[in-house]
Length: 248
Image (tube, rainbow, N blue to C red; front, side, top):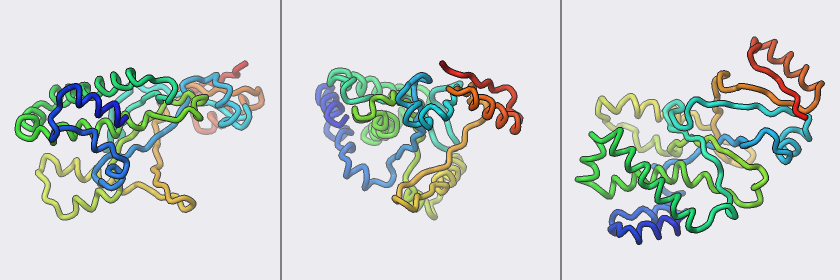
């Protein structure tokens, strides 16, 4: 991703002080606590993916839940989310990657100038280097997490990507006097970040992400016995509207 972004900025004649490719140095990303990090919920793009049934559904003895979302982008609590298909190494050419970076670069710039123009236009005029840093943050938050190695290609993964600052970010806001218009936003972001937890076995951070029952549209099983068991669980919880289907 770094090389494609670097090439795009060079070919587009972006001034040195406005280039964002250097921000994609992994050591810089890890060190900068204000940059976004993604929480990722992994789902498969297909309900009939035999690899997933075998490896993630207890050798076809488990279940597959079909989810349906009204919007592919939006807000989860105080953080932005986006639903994106993964990009595998062998399924994207250098030219395709270049075009993807170009499109996403202009997409977020257009969004900023469209829906937030009262803030974005003065920022672009008076501090263009800060303007393009917002673009870098968007690319780090929602484009970089889409890439996966070919060893996982059989998963055909789609990701629900939820962008959030690192937990240390909250210390930057301690005792800071925020404008009234931003105070509620800052408070909600701090609460969201504080809900982060850490695994005792490997030290990785995670969040418990809860989705509304309305997104669960259907449950697939491959064994008749499982169908009856799942239907009983749904009845106990009052979810009579969710069908259970046996796949051949």
